[in-house]
Length: 59
Image 1 (tube, helix red, strand yellow):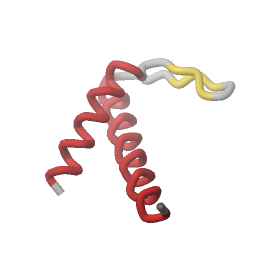
Image 2 (cartoon, helix red, strand yellow):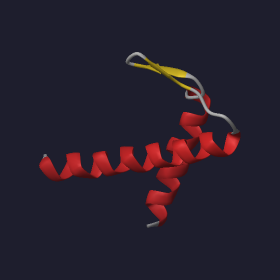
Image 3 (cartoon, one colour):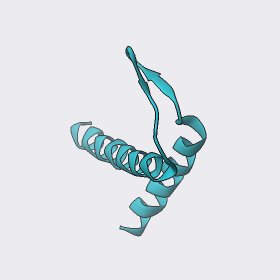
Image 4 (cartoon, one colour):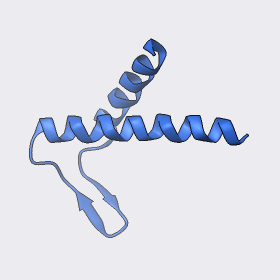
């Protein structure tokens, strides 16, 4: 579990430098405060890890 935590922190750190306002399709994502941004990054990191694990199980 600790490995996943470190990986999540790494992804979250990466996202903090990449995502603040980003165009997704025709929508613009913007965050009202830092807490909302942190929450979004954490959920996104968890989704990336989940997708990564699912991809490994199919290969």
